[in-house]
Image (cartoon, rainbow, N blue to C red; front, side, top):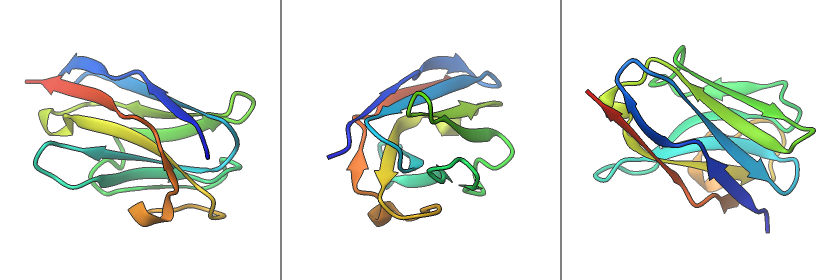
Length: 120
């Protein structure tokens, strides 16, 4: 089982930035999702194990950037121009599939989640 440990969440004002980190126990295709209290788990971004391919949901394209440092087995989600509607618990996830993965059930292991709150 893959161990995933997230960090970097917190409270930020609208228009601000946060960077989430996810330390993994190996190198996998990785993704970021979020879940607000009344919503399902929403896909945000994915990066291939090499870091050469990325894909974003339309809702965050241009504002969020996924990246990875394979020397540290860590994946990042840089979030800029945050909005109150970005408030949610953010999860990283690992997939054993090659390339990228954009669907929740393509992921096998999940982090514990980190809360992001954007105030207006």
